Image (cartoon, rainbow, N blue to C red; front, top):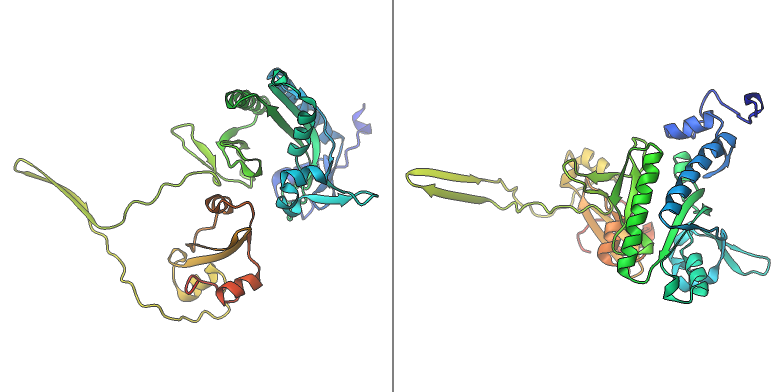
Length: 358
């Protein structure tokens, strides 16, 4: 095809809703166009690039022993109800009804469907191991689609599923997939790190996310420059602070005194008192109003879980990591409480709740 015939609607300026550089460039280059929030038309130039990436993925996965399938994007509710995720998945699951008023969903992932297929068709352990993957359209009804195609609602995803006879076999398949993913990212010329990550709703004992390092990313990782350790911040372990009580360690050798020690000035505890902070709800506002550093303020956040109401207290300059809090509480669902719940639990309006009297 001649270039003059190529459907390539370029723009001189990026639209105002384009946030990150990749989004702006793809819009201006005529690769994508926005149809609705988080939903895009994918134009010829985009598809040319994506098809090349798909071919790399297929080559590496096929070489590792995986087989490609294509599963339906519309899935019956019965499978999700059987797994317990019909309600657990939340509002991101787009639920729909057919003309007979039967419940379906537009698949955000395919664990239920692939497991149903294998349990119906695999009759003997001799048919295992089995490693299946697909490149399929997914839909997740994100509350805030952003970053162009990085966090959209409809997207193309490669997802793979393996079935093994035992845990050792599963770990061997995992290693093969780890190596295949590494090869895919290298062949695409990307600078990446494989980091330890939370297993999420899928569960399991360990997981890795392959992160492309970029300034425009939405996730942060903790990595060591002297070893191979790297983890998503939701997974990264934090070393406890050392005991801050004053200590003195003194040793002697002959007539030469050898000593080491330090003293720590502990701030005097003052009696509790009521301090007026009119209309100052955020830590930043209170900190500025009282002329107190944010790290000396306790931030109280109220969460709702399936097991009840929980108050999380953190330093004013810190944020609550909801994934770690959920793991600590061993719950499946955790959401910030609404204003009425906060008021009922703390007897304070939202923005003024604190630990006193809870």
